[in-house]
Amino acid sequence: MCDGSADPSSSVTNFVNTPGDCFTACRTYGQAAFSVYRPTSQFYGLCAASSTPTNTQGTDPKNCGESGFFLYSHSAASSASGLARRQLREKLDVARKERQRREKFCPKGLIACAVEGWDSYECIDTSSELESCGGCIYGEYGSFFNTTSTGTDCSALPGVSLGAGTCQVSKCQAHACKQVYELIGGQCESQI
Image (cartoon, rainbow, N blue to C red; front, side):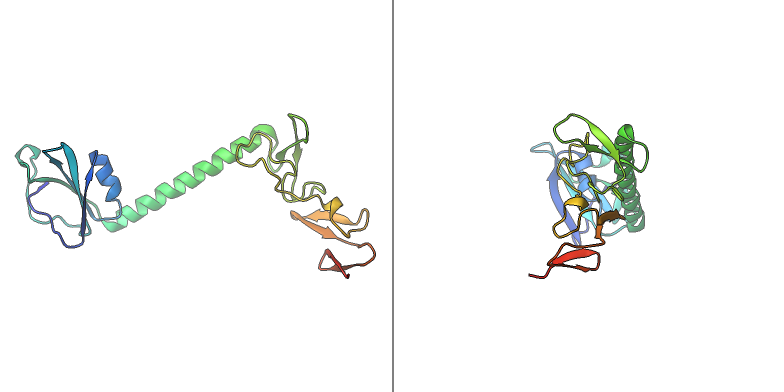
């Protein structure tokens, strides 16, 4: 649709390289309009808050002339729901790819943790593993993003008596402490 005049109230204008750039810039507005700026052959984009076209003069792009705009409009509700659906779809896609990457190495519920000094891994349930509680001590195997330690070795916590540490629901729990330590809420705290 060609719009011979643009409502300057509640609008934003800018030069863009393509009509697609205009739509991207105007995604939160009710209208997107663009026209070719003849001296530079760039597109002149206009974003307007109104969701109803103003002063439309025709629908034939050939009759727009140099001052005419190609005008596109959508309701704010359709824009918001479309954006929310797209963001949800992207989040689900990232989660699916991460799940596939993890299941490539280990059965569901286990994580491929790197073995120190080797190009190898072991499948671990980090919610209950004593030496990799809450994550992999040497990073996840096959992960470009998670190569640092994310877990805790519950058997090496200071103040915990030998054999008195466990991993429950991805957190270290102490059941007995060495001398000069006191057991408080499943943790050994120094009394010095």
